[in-house]
Length: 573
Ligand code: 9MR
Image 1 (cartoon, helix red, strand yellow):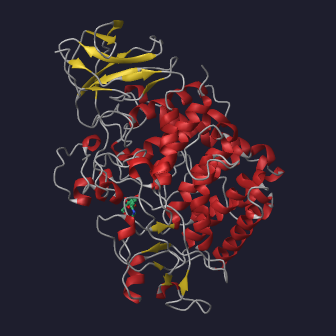
Image 2: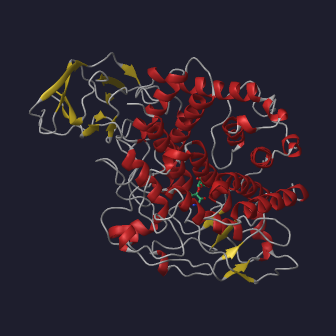
Image 3: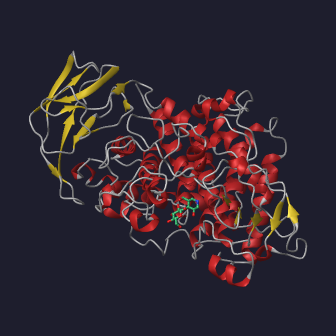
């Protein structure tokens, strides 16, 4: 009855902008009228009819939507379907995702290594520092004349990658690229996002301060003698589910790799541009970043075949290292990204001509791939678009191709989205539901925002609308009914695969972290007992052993930060 909560009514559990599309999707067969009421169900403020049915291409199940877009009055409400029940509450408000944007940035603070998180900043999730990383061993795979096996180096700061306690350059690369891009694309808006961190009182936007915590770690991962960058800083094997300060196993840096070194070059080159305005606050840092980037590029030129191969490494060296591999045998995309960032920062054409961007022989006639840790070529295209006005003639002549790439990608994303069971861009294909699918949804949203910002497509306004729709997906309008962000919404992950959240003895997990989300292959990959469905868009389990569907990771949180903050920056009410 109308008095009880119905989990079949799926909607964005945070809410909607007053003038935005507002849709709830009913995941059970239902028809007839629906209402919007106050949370106490006493006052009906809007009445509508459920729409025509849609069939879920992945499960065959029927959905119908309750469209209340024309209701614009700010307030807190629920959707009621007579005879079925009511939804979780949601808000209509002009800056309705502001707290989420701040919370998602703050998520990175909770991932910091090597610093106490006092109550003043961390609230009930206060904890002592873990992993100072001031005594890190050179693993035999990383030995050089200057730094033989067993040499002790200091490589402090940075964020924990995910639910584990290691630090990986490749994954830091795309994460930093995404956060720095937010700072570059919305420089004024990011200043308004105060996250209550130790650096909040300085002149930098908090999200940039947060990114610098990891940037300073990344700088220590470059071998000063040759410019190569170690693939990761890690334990030999994963820690147990214990607090960071209790995890004191030996740490190593392992082999330098081509992907780590090129991702590092891209990040340092972009960072150099982004922090340039803060000369007084960060004396010399922009120059240091650029020279680190150039040095890394030179190493890459001399070592193009240095792919990271953990199995080969383990058969040659001891101890075996069995933590996250971030292995990627093709570096053509990392070359593109590094080349474009170096070119955009230095305006030196030789970086631009070092790679072939147009035509991109790997994606002829196809939409560009969404950014992900092993696939960064599209980050190069975004940067050409965002720096279009300051490029040399050589880059400028390719801007029509850049625009066309962005439009082709965006059009392919919005095509058919309205027919999808949840009317989202996310989930049109079972292929969306990979490990870390929540980041796919967020990166689809970012792609749409890039096309909205940097093209003249007649579909621009739809791009922005559909970016918002993917936030609806992330916050509850999906086949499992979860808002995938810890602490944001009513039905949220309570048991993420996240060591501090498991070990801290506090019921609520650390907030502002994006669960990897639905993953068609999760049951096979993590063998956590309890999965209840094998349908691609339903394989999700809120249990801490379900690391293939319910871990958190910095490369997933970063696109959540970008999407949420960019939507807030762009809203016009
Ligand atoms: O995000 C990574 C995903 O694309 C891979 O399929 C998966 C298995 O290799 O690894 C994921 O990355 C994990 C990393 O290896 C270690 N830290 C946790 C990461 C998130 O699960």
